[in-house]
Length: 220
Image 1 (tube, rainbow, N blue to C red):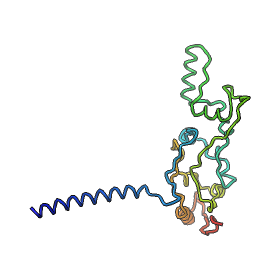
Image 2: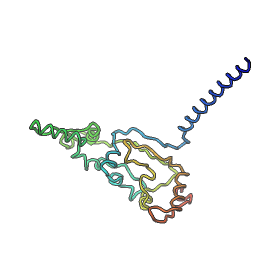
Image 3: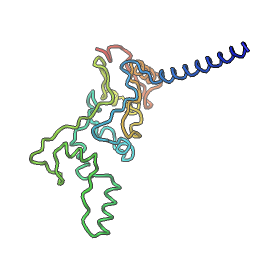
Image 4: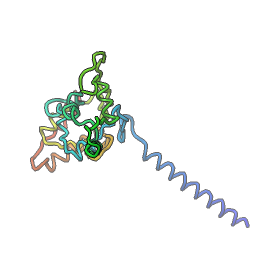
């Protein structure tokens, strides 16, 4: 009887140990070192779909983030860039086509269709239903939330990487598949250094590369 009791206690302890290890492993998997925002995916003031724009519509990243070619910063596009298309495209293509079909059947002009998210853009710009500035409206900027943030003591140049033919997705992941952008890589110093070592070893886009491994290249 004593041996049976010992076996039962041992079994309970083993089950508890396994459960504790599994719980600890799950928590460690979600643990991030300070400054590591991998997986960060903030809700934006306007639900902009990169999956739609960059994926389905194949809009080049640099059409909106045009600063990437000439500046340290890729930049968040001004609302005027959005309006290049959305002066005319006010809702999803499916909604616009459906309204056109209904208007034809009912022998009337199509009603103006505006999506909830695009209305936020028009409201911020102080535009009326005819895309004209409201007399009493004060235009405001869209308060987009930056997803990828580097410490102030790190120097990173988008233009240098674009000139070297580094693809956007090497750092940002498959943004064209994301409904809402999230940070894919940890953007740690080790990750950057390993990338420089790799391209120096195997090249980039069929070309040899001399990516700096000097501390002063990024910290000065």
